[in-house]
Length: 312
Image (cartoon, rainbow, N blue to C red; front, side, top):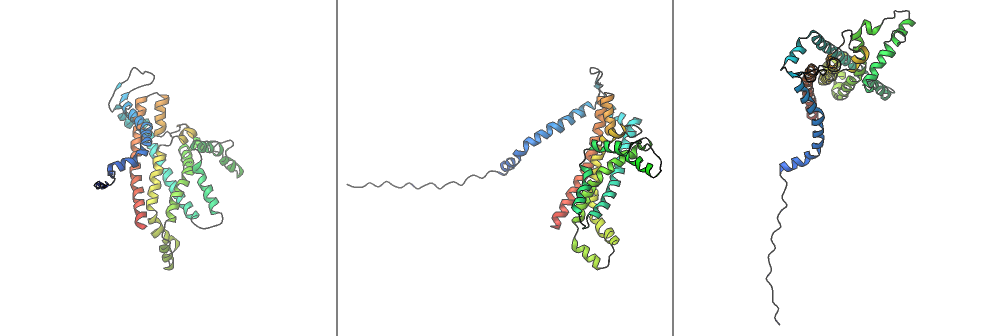
């Protein structure tokens, strides 16, 4: 018997697995973020678009059928009405005062807490506490516990030393609102500036001390220039939130005595006067102002990241 040999078939070379394209890989990495992006668009962007559309209408909720397109008349009224202009000025004054005072006090506290002393961690935690208080609760605390002319702490201390018994909210309404906001936002500024202080170059500071530089000279020529970006970041982030503050004005003064800022005016126009179009226009103005401030804040944050990366 003769064995028949079958010719061997040469095996085809295995094809390398096809690599996914860059576009597919990009979509694969971004796909988990799509639900969050869709949720953000539904919750934030669609209501803003609706507000923008309503701002171009003369629309009173008491007369829902009597609404018509007015163009930019609502925006003209926002910028020309004396009460609305006053609320814009109050918003600017409130924001500038609170941000500047909070920055100065936050810098002073940060310089103190940057030193080593027993119990520094406990003190830092206590200093952060005001920023963690709910804004409405903080405003109620200042209104009833501190400002009340009959049983408030301020008048109690003045009575103890034989001083006057002023009505703090009636006599200095805007200052009363500013003080409560400064108390709450100083810890926020302190945290940002404390992070800046701890990022200083220790060798540079030691070399300055060896050369005979005083504490004031070190602060003026080394510390303060180093903290410039952090000061800008604190000012911008604080401005974004304080421009939109509603809780303190509503709780302490109810917008009276010349303390109505733009967010409270939006509340009055919408919920009390039922002027949906006018309130929407004022709200759009607040959002545009916040976006402008946020743009500068993002640039400052980006520059800080670039500086840290370059230093590393």
